[in-house]
Length: 231
Ligand SMILES: Cc1cc2nc3c(=O)[nH]c(=O)nc-3n(C[C@H](O)[C@H](O)[C@H](O)COP(=O)(O)O)c2cc1C
Image 1 (spheres, helix red, strand yellow):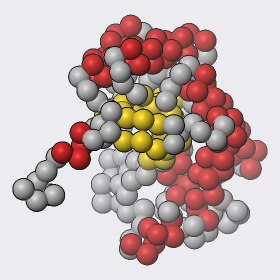
Image 2 (cartoon, protein in one colour; image 1 turned 30 degrees about the vertical axis):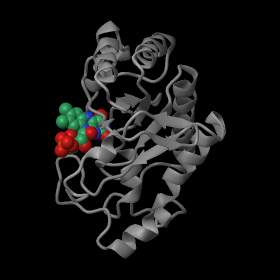
Image 3 (cartoon, helix red, strand yellow; image 1 turned 180 degrees about the vertical axis):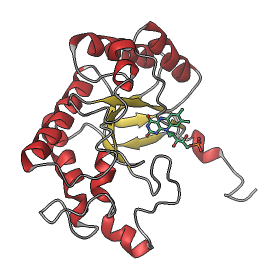
């Protein structure tokens, strides 16, 4: 059997820094709208625990809202049942989710989500940008506090971080706009702020994507060279 047919590698343990996974099977983040008032309850804990019990190496939670007034953008109804990563009640809920996954032998990252302007980011003032970065950092600190094994920043699908990445939604002329490398500035400041609060060993991952929500022909980069500059 050649390497392309073999799935054996998926079942090998994975290690990076302090992160040790029993295999390389990762559960993708999937929004469930099942946390009334932003609070993940017992059913949410049971849902993630079942995935760990059945051998998923790493779970990435559904997108969880950071604490910012515009987080749900044009879909305010989502504010009601997308889980929050702030506030005592929601954090207690997450703590139970994490404990359940760990008891079942699994690992779990929290996905940090801000939906953004769903248009363009040109209107954000420097002050608002600093507030957004701080909101991400606070959420990262909360994720670590409740025991998550790491975080994933949602930087794809046309949401806030991706809106800074993409030339169509970011035509800013200040330090947050410009060529592909310059458009990564917001994300890199978010990552640095998260790193500052979680310390050197806590895993921080960034999800990126070519496509946008409901717009699958969009492209973040056109060539491998451009992708290299972006990364
Ligand atoms: C119901 C549903 C909800 C999703 N929610 C999220 C999400 O919260 N965060 C995210 O990064 N991706 C989300 N996605 C995208 C998935 O993580 C994944 O990339 C997508 O389903 C493509 O993988 P597939 O081809 O295996 O389905 C969602 C997908 C589905 C179907």
